[in-house]
Image (cartoon, rainbow, N blue to C red):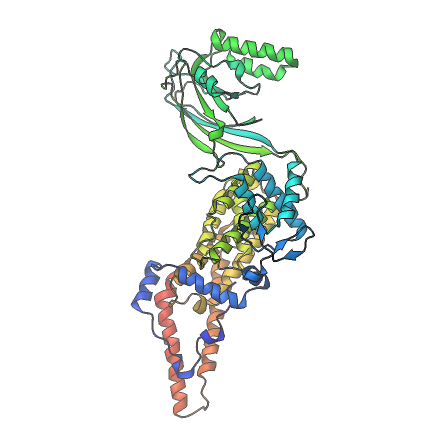
Length: 573
């Protein structure tokens, strides 16, 4: 919560000079159009206000002399941390007040996702493993010796089982294979190992890639009857041993009722022993060449090394038997995920708890770097590519859902309300995403009870904070401060959204929102008037002095009413 302004800046000091001017045309225009000024000044002033009366945790995070590193014994020292890989420069230190046991679990999980990263970072900037390790070391203020100890532990652990998740959405403009002018398409997918030479051979005109080069794990979609623009929206998983020189191969076939390729693929579940596997591969190859009554409709290959860490969704051209792109298109989403193969360090901890601490330290790291550059305007949305890569890798390797990720970011920002001037527009965006994702029963049903309880606690904390800001409406959202009225709109929008959520409605019905705001403004106005009366109270109860003081009080109240009418009423009426 924002701290009160210092005594020097409080209103109504100075007796007769108390009278304030009515809002200028500039301020009235700002109130009607939204702030056209930058909010840099606003955030700088807010943080100066907070700095004077911030919490103990906030002060320790903002002081440069509070930045400390950890040594193997767990004690603190102020010596600079240097990279174990590149000691040519000192690693910037970021405040980290995590307990040693919590730090060990979060940091080791962070190292794990770096050592077993999946996919590449899209864009022009290439992120090396050493850069990610250096950033993690800086974000958690871990010394070189302790970092080396953690690295040795993680290198001895088994990595997660890597999986390619393929979502087959739809096809379009496919070839007609049946007499009725349509086809009954279905797809068979697998991972094939192709060297550059193999790939050239596979694309040779008049020849198909041998099916016996496919991995034994093949998956088959359902059959879509009588269509050239099928819709599947089906999801499949293929286990990976490596991504180097590996390709996803999709073959599209037209289904017929006789002996089919699909029937042979399904027989893999009945195979036992090496001899059975060899016979199944031979049968599959024979059917693919000539014996199947299923008609081949097209194929495409996609290199796994070109899948970005956030996944990719696109339309892909199908090639016919002769390698020509005239067989239609398929719309797929390709993304990596993982299954953890080792017991967590703390079995009672769900991955979203580690993700919470990881995201908070990433935000603090970026805030710390921005503070060193005179605190430019920042909406607390991460832009550092190393932080984004770490968080993305953690989501991939722990199969975190969209709603989990949004809830955690929201919880992190709420936990920082009393420490920094968090951007309420960003909080409003997260609330909108939470409401949208909550409407999907599948997504909301995946949440644990403790997550829902945490969400309710976050809603209550944000409600209390926003109402506290409204109780200091004239100080915090003064029309004389550029951008403050825009922030008032965002604060009210946050209150509206949290009262709309089903979890919050179970505790606070929607009609109470107006009551809470009205009561808060009434109490704030009553306190404001008492302060004004105290400062304007005459020394004598009669004479000229009484009249002058009453006139001053009247002007003060009138100016406040004018300002409320021009600036505030549009947000409350």
